[in-house]
Image 1 (cartoon, one colour):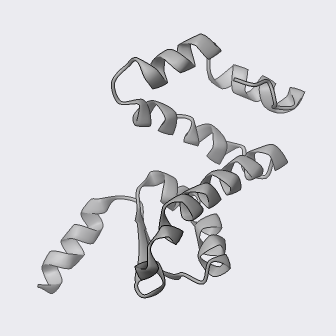
Image 2: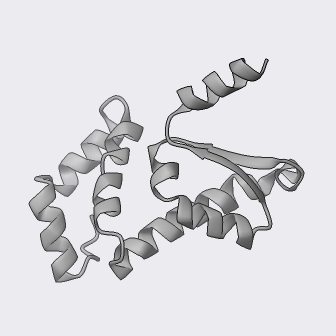
Length: 124
């Protein structure tokens, strides 16, 4: 959107996705399920781990989530913090680091919620 990728990363992005800023904005603001649309870009981030710009995007985004949402609750330091979903599972190394940084007690990081639900009901 803002042409901040270096030449190499931009070429990788353009080889993976055929889109324009206008299409991105339309998918985010006018079409249904913008969260799924945005999550589709997580694959690109996962495939390009190690590139400094990608690492910054992931770390900044997850840190924003921690600061904007988790830090607001006093209970966050009283209980284990659990994460579910492909994005959390794919970037669990950074989530672990952030839990350490914020002194949160990290619980489970599950890729699919069904596994946790099955475990819960088996223990009941």
